[in-house]
Image 1 (tube, rainbow, N blue to C red):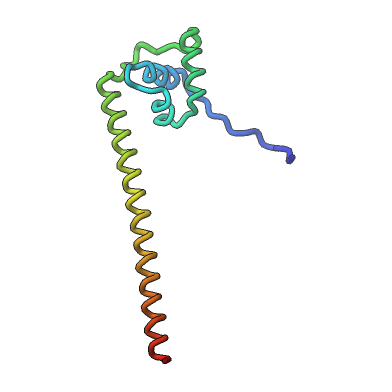
Image 2: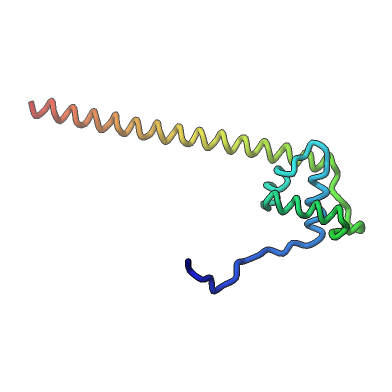
Length: 120
């Protein structure tokens, strides 16, 4: 096994970021998994932050205004809509690629058959 000479890159998150993520995950109808994927963090990290938040190790800076629940729900629905749209576009793109390959094969078959008929 090779030895690593450089340490792995670790990300440092501020307490405000952690608290915001935890508060966002505590809203009703919001899944922790969705919050973690939206923030591009691992769900277990969010779980650890929630535990630290409950123990009082992470505190919220009350001077900053927290986002409204309705605004967060709106962002989550928009995110889900964009993810569905992205999946649909990927499927359409794959279908178009298959269609293009099919047409190329048909064209090649037509060329080969016309050559064979000329040679006969």
